[in-house]
Image 1 (cartoon, rainbow, N blue to C red):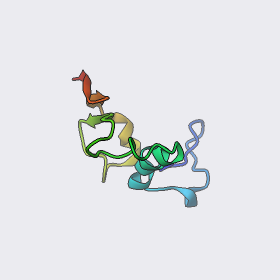
Image 2: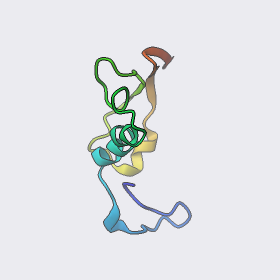
Image 3: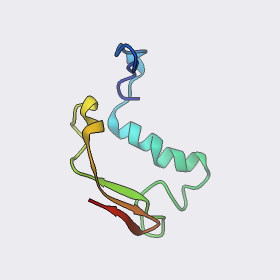
Image 4: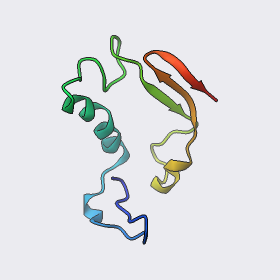
Length: 86
């Protein structure tokens, strides 16, 4: 969504349709929960909602979109329980 680049050629496909990281993350979290009619219990980090999240080893905002896949997961929480810790 951020780069719209072909994995085969690396060429952009519809670069005018690229979105920024914040909009991209919203699509996978808040908007996905809304699409499932589940925004009351998931999609954002709030009291009373399921705690499914991951903590990365670096901030993604401001990072070159090509470098985002280099980020490593330091911590993963599912249903409020730590299931992975690096």
